[in-house]
Image 1 (cartoon, each protein chain N blue to C red):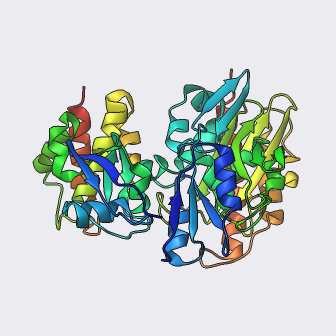
Image 2: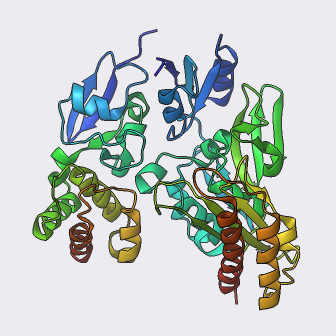
Length: 158
Length: 281
């Protein structure tokens, strides 16, 4: 049985994906069908956060989501993050804090933090925000600058 | 990974029919997929048909008086933002927050966690101390089971092949806590975990241990010394000692038996004291 096309709005643009196998992950559709290589594959088991994107505004591990399961959703990747006011603030905070070394984990951290700030803004204490980032890994262990960036973005939130 | 066909039925009846009609190696029901997709990829689950539950109207959270019903496909993250869960079932909040990180919890569900029955499930110990019940729909009709009977072992439940979890029900608000020990705080599996809850209706405590094979269990002997909502320090010590001695703990790659026994006792003491601090005034 042939599956229907998957319709997504990716970074504000409507996309229709044909012939997506039923078992394909959103991560692979983004990278290989849409050529959005900013979303990284780390562990592919939901353990590192490198593949985090926003699905309908909520942070999501794209390695653990089937593309067909998010049919009809709006997806934001690192390439489109600056069009979101919260995402723009997070990106600026990462730049100001110098919160990257090799940069591989950075898209995941930026998307995860954008999702957390969109959900709660400053209504949650900054400690809760940092707890929410504990599931993202930085193998360069550049965590103090990432924490500094998160604090900056939190302080700049409405 | 074996390739599979993904079906997306619109009703529970259609979903059960799709599961029932599967041939050969059967079918798997898909909720959030955060556990099932890994097992499919690694070949630990082998099936050529996956039935998605995403169109079923089960993403619900309803309070009826003091009892809470959570739809099986509600993402765990939604539970975190319910104000009454935060104040009236704090142990459930602890446990939900122990599962992965926020991005995982936007997809992972209660129903998926219970149906997959991982030995180190963070939700099962707390739900045992809350006397949770599981509501099932199946071809033979609806039935309701205590969680303790639903989970039969490691990755084993009493779900029939085409039966589905519709919801879980927690009968009353309970001061409660869930504490765990891990190598890494997020996205890791607990070496040992302890849940405690105080039932205002029964005026008694429940204590459960998780992170132990084959499944989380209640440890009544660890609850027995705890008398009333504010037990004495001596009673708390006795509860911890009973847990250390009697918890069904074994060694595996995540820790020795001795280490886990000592931790289990220590965590019971901490969890009871934390729960006393959470009692309504």
